[in-house]
Length: 104
Image (cartoon, rainbow, N blue to C red; front, side, top):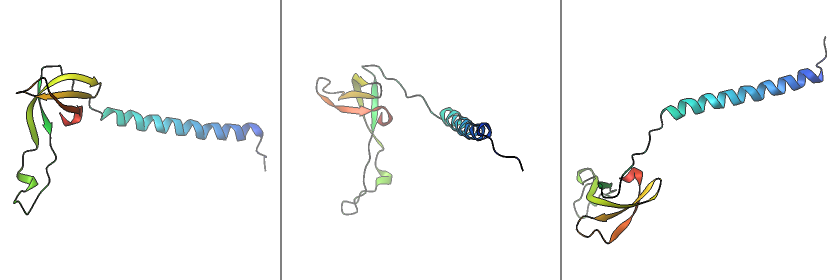
């Protein structure tokens, strides 16, 4: 029965590491295909902001029937690559807050 040489041990170790890297690259490649690019907005654009309404049986409100978005609002500035400062159309000098891109 042949013995396992140090070369074969090192080869087996490297082959498992290579296999793991290839599998990780393959998973990343297919996962990156599904990523959508975030929309970019310019200052002055009108947007709607997603709202999360809760049902309230005491007041007779159902979340299914409530509006899913509030607005329109105007974008004042871009604070980061993924967030914008917005204001009401009526009073554009007073910012309402900073909202991330997925909510716009």
